[in-house]
Amino acid sequence: FSVPGVSGQATPFSIPTIDLAGEINRQVVVDWEPGQYLGHPTTVLLEDHRSILVVYPQGPGRGPIVMKRSPDGGLTWGSPEVVTDHPDADLCEPGAIRSPDGSTIALLLRENSRTHNSFVVFSTDEGKTWTDPRELPAALTGDRHTAYPGVELLPDSTFVVTTYGHWVDGEEPFVVSVRFTLDELDGRFPG
Image (cartoon, rainbow, N blue to C red; front, side):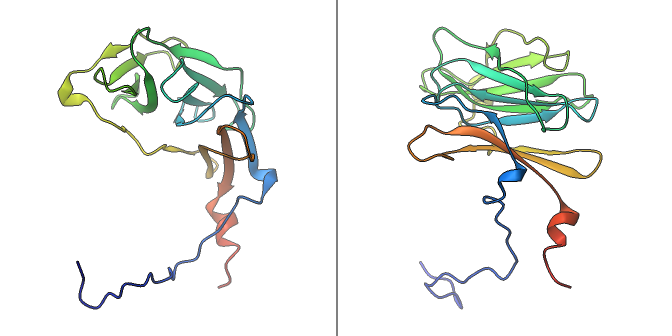
């Protein structure tokens, strides 16, 4: 397969990039349990426009779906709370979305063993309580509902970006967030 005018060699991007990985002062550990796989986070900004929920599985499809709450825009995170678990399904890779009227948070969950359809749980009280998991019909089942969309914009123009990774050699992945503003990043480029 070839495209006219395009060679087989990769062309470097001409847009500027910024690597924040070395800026430890920006990084906030959301959850790290040595030896425990923690990954696939999703976030949702709550109605007060300051509190954030992060939801992720304890283990990839083997364990409960847990959440932590940040009352201060991602600077600190509370203790993990179980959102849902299922005795026969391997729930994984949550994706949070708010209803159009803002009253309900839906959490879509992939079923990791592929022996069930996807599941969904709902909260009508900003994540204080959640419904029992309901299996979705095949027409609504997806493999990955989101691409780990832990990006929230606070009213002061601060982005809180949350993801997971192998941050320590030899350790299982864990969840970290980073805060920045576009003005900060723009200031790194001349002109």
